[in-house]
Length: 64
Image (cartoon, rainbow, N blue to C red; front, side):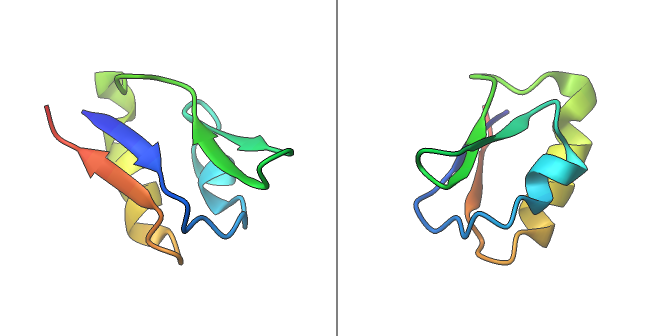
């Protein structure tokens, strides 16, 4: 599984708080970014939760 944060990100940092292992906040772009090219299996569930809870629908999941 891969994931990306789209330009729709509002920068509310909810995904960062929910899953800091995967998401980090870019102060220059004022939005979240993803730390991994491929999400580790043990973090897939929490990443799916972050995508579901994203108010801007800015987290896109790409299935392998």
